[in-house]
Every structure is written in structure tokens, then in C-alpha cells.
Length: 484
Ligand code: BG6
Image: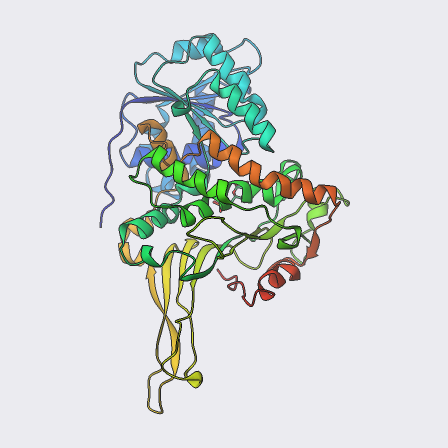
């Protein structure tokens, strides 16, 4: 099966923070892949903007090195890479000063989609917006893309939203949560709302509980300074895990349109109950044979920031009353594995007798690695000697099922950048969603700060702290094994 490529209109894209890590690892390689797919029109301009003193040729070399390092396709597409680089230019700019803005204005002259990608810390969002406006660079067709973290609590998120709203309308603001760009995350919506099979069972009457796991094997590495001020709650739960939770739990939107989808997600967030302290487990990794402890990595022996968190959430509405949602995420765990597991209830009565065994259907949606879905069903164990039941997976690896299209799945950033150019906000967070998410997480953070709680230490390469296992054990349940 060959992937269908939808052409996009000409565009000008300005990447602020163009010499930063995100631009190097994700934005530039993603643009190159979209170029290969035919989605960078001949007249498209990609302008790097940053403080670094550099000219366009220097930026092209920087971009080339980044693409060679992070896009395996570069090696076999040298001529195309050279062509792609011709779209790139650079302006050295002072976000808080005067220099560079007139030059940027001169560079941007097309009457086409104009997107500003703020790949910078949130402290600069307001300055950039204000200067773009003051220099007459903002046009009705322009859009602004902002990265997480979108604030560190409700109050700061409100300030950011207000700052952007002075210069841009909400339908011009694209708040990235790269999890929403992942193929399987979108597949969640296709599975739920494109099939008749699941939706009638998708409620508290038939679902025992849901687990959402985003486990990583890496530690905080060089990001200690940022991470130690955030922790897993702010870094992962407030955004990525909550977005997954919304897509799993929301009501069917009336259509696949940005506001219809985001309205439904917002209702889920607003229906989340406050989480009791005993339903939250925080952990921090110890030193292991192949790496330092969290505290060593962030250079603070007394750090009480969590590198792991598990919690039990409840959604107070008719559909989910009584069905717990268990969320966990952490670094330096046993495996890199992100999945959503929907555990259905057992059949109400077994006709096969107590000895045959009983089990429940489990739908596992694997986000990474090896995107796919598995539905565990119960069948008869083959052979004579009566009726014994066993569970077998109905397995669907997307890569296998979809052939070439499956293995060539675009990176989340490729899809999201193209959605910005096309003007499709469905996979971006709306301002009210972000604020509602902080409104749910803030009291939990304030609670453990007030109680001066320290995270439990856990050994790297494990499932995280013991208490995380207990969170489910005491409800008579267990986490799915962490395995790659
Ligand atoms: C980022 C977090 O948003 O997501 C990181 O800041 C985390 O701490 C990363 O490692 C995980 O993303 P992915 O796509 O590798 O699962």
C-alpha cells in the first residue's frame, strides 16, 4: 500500500530557536522528509531565526548536519537534500531587542500561509509575538506554533494564553503536544469511532479499568536543569498522558473537526475528580550499573522531583462512573513502552464451571515501539479432556498489516507541521484545554509540596517504586508487564 500524499499550499515558515535541539532533532529532519514526500512546494521558504550570528550558508550547513544525523533517509537522497537546503535561509535576531526584525520582514514577502514556530522557552513567547506585530510581520494568514511546556501551572498558562491572545486569534495558535501527532494516537479515534464493535462496550458497565503507561529507559541526561523544575507530572502527565486519557474517554464528537474534538476532550478534563494523596505514587531513580542516580544527574542530592509517577484517576460522568484510569510514566524503567490497555470485565456467568478458568478481554493499543493493537480473547485450549479456557491474542501489527505504509509512518512532527500549514488544529491543544489540565494537576503538586513529600527511590531497569504496584494490587488488579 502506498501512502497518499496530499499537496500543500505554498508557505513561509519561520523557526525561532532554529539552532536549538528541537530544530536539530525534529523540525529540520521532519521538513526534509516532507520535502521528499512532495509537500514542500517550490516557492516555500523556511527561515531559521536565532540569536547565533550566522548567515544563510552557515544555517544550511547546520541543517544538513542535523538532517544527516537524525534522518536515515539523507544518506540515500543526497541530491534531494541539496535541493531541500535551497529553501532555507537564516536571520540573526534578538527576540528582546531590535536587531534582525527588519531583515526578517524583508525575507517574508509572499501572500501565502505564514507560520511562526516558537521553538524557544515560554518566557520568550510574549516578546516574539509583540515584536512580530510591531514590525508588521503578522498577517491574517499567519499562524503561530508553540511548544510545551505551556506554563508550569494554571496561573502561568493563563499569562501565556493572554500574552498570545493580544496578537493572535485562538484559531491562529497551534499548541503542540507531539503525542497527538503519533500515528497510533490518532488511530485511537479511528478504532473507537470507525468501528461498531468497540463503542457499545466502551463504558463503565463493560470496562473494568484502563491503564495508560508511558515508560522510558532513558534518564534525564543533559536536560536536568529543565526537568528538575518540572518532574514527571508537569513534563508528561499534564500533557501527553492527559491527552491520551481524553482520547480514550471522550464522547464521540459529532464530526472530526478541531473544535468538535477539543470540546469533547475538554469535557473529560473538567470531569476528572481530584486525586487523593494515597492514589499518587512518586518515584526517583537510583544509580545503576549503567548510569548515575537522578539526584546526581540534576546535581542536587536533595532534589525531591519525581522521575516517575503513577496515579489513579476517576472521571465523574455517566459513561465512566466507577471505572478507574491508572496512569504511569517514568524514566530509567525496564523498557521503553507506551501503551493503553482497556481491561474489560469478566463475563457475568461462566457456563463452563469454575475449573475451566475465566478471563477478561483486554484491548491493548501499543503506541511505541511497534505500533499495533492486540485484543485478548478467550478460546478453548486445544485437545481432549474437557473444556479448559485459555487467552490468545488477536494481534495486529500496523507495520505488518499495512506493509510499506505501516513501516514508513511519519514522525509526529512531520504531521503536525503540515497540519499547521494546512490550518488544521484538530491535533493541537486549545487554550482552555491546557488551562483545565493545569487546574487538575496543580492541586496534586501543591499537595505533595505542602506535605514535603519525597519520592520513593527505585532501581533503574525495574517497574518503578513498589508502591506503584500496590496502587493496583490493593484494588485486586495488576499493571501490565513492562516489555519492549
Ligand atoms: C517530551 C518530554 O515531551 O516527551 C520528555 O519532555 C520525554 O521528557 C518525551 O522523554 C517522550 O517522547 P517520546 O515521543 O520519545 O515518547
